[in-house]
Image (cartoon, rainbow, N blue to C red; front, side):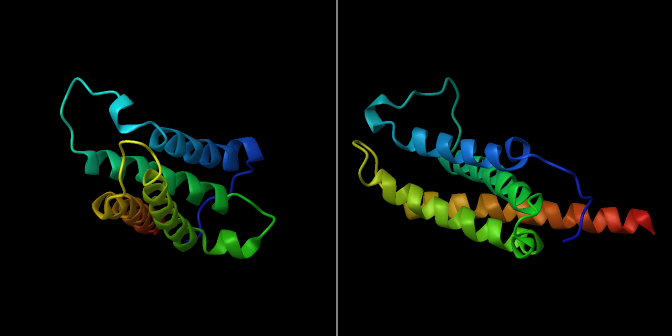
Length: 134
């Protein structure tokens, strides 16, 4: 998908995705009995989807706005979807070794769906943008 090209530094393009991935890893490392409770009820699947929606966006942005590897930039959406799903799978695997936590295929699916929802939103925005230019 061809969009407007901006000039981003490493700190502006790649670092946010790295930091978000580190945040996901850190949260996954909290033992189950130490995990804070929220003052309201929300499905953990929605939380997983939202966290990985943002992760997919940040990975897409990092790939899209780098210039060193043109093929990564050209295929940034499909690569970011694949990377998001892979990171979700690794996150669930990591939780197998975190006390009080367990791997859950439904969490992995929610992670992947979050990335897919980002892709759908991006494609719709791109289509709308193209139709407005006509």
